Length: 339
Image 1 (cartoon, rainbow, N blue to C red):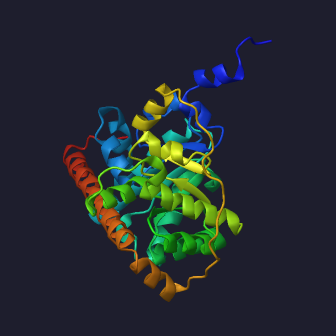
Image 2 (cartoon, rainbow, N blue to C red):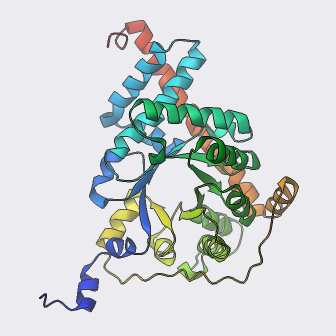
Image 3 (cartoon, rainbow, N blue to C red):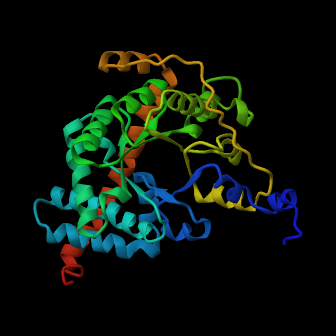
């Protein structure tokens, strides 16, 4: 028998190991080489993370392979660049899936955030690329912006195509309710970006974890979902510090950057489940008009959703510019045409 007491054993455990007992830990990164150390269940990516990873020397082969694919599939230059983008996102996803036992989230272009049909089409194309590589759709979550159109795209993908969706850029309770009613698989409420807004728009510049507005938002959503038995699960995202992460221990999933995962792995403070599922809210229903009104009433959510879409779109443009330069260079040199 072990002579180590339960209390001492817990103190020896890292905060990350303890957190995994209450919550599914997900790595928020496009740098799949950073995943091995922390053994997350799933991983998430977005255009900004893929852009950062695509600039790293160790991932240039994925960029070159994606450009080869784009050229080989022909079409106009715009079509080749679009095909290259899709292939690149999936290529990173495929590498990540070699390192996690669960799922990877791959994002639809944020510039389609207000076009339901275009989001559905792009999502199905991404799924087809995964399936061509031998990955079943059950291991992929399609990330969509939580606009009304994005939520309806998620509903259609889930109901008609069996494609699981991760609704991102979620800041308001109205967005969360609409996602639950659409029966999407998962939502990603953004903790840190809510905190950022409150710091920028109030005299208060610091918050304890238990009063952090992002933590409070996710707690409210989680408790509401559990009270009314929604199948949609909650994955807190966009953390600014480990205090926010610890305050949400017990949430269904938390997606955490490698930097914060490293801090948690070196932290040996005790972690307990913080979310109680207690909720005194009444159940509400939101049609499109009610959704738009309630979301519009939340200034923070309106500003952060539009800002998030713009930033993801801007990084997609930067990535396209990088691809276009490499694409043009490869056509001139012929270096990538022989494979």
